Image (cartoon, rainbow, N blue to C red):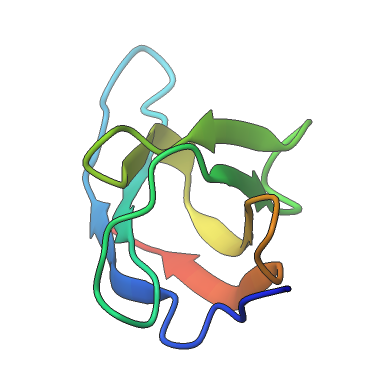
Length: 99
């Protein structure tokens, strides 16, 4: 039986910061916590971030607390994909990282 990711994300927080170096590259962070429709956190979820601002997609797996993090990503618009066997894949589009 498949369970849907209804209200899959309890939090998807995007924090932007500036990293200043020789080329003054501007970056931000994408952080969040993944939970099912009952509010129970989901460890082991594969989270993938894609964007035209990236050369290759970024991937992370949620911790035992259901959290994930993509630190120092280029500013831009992202699509975040959440996958866990036994659950329907959830996609959050138009996640914007700005200064």
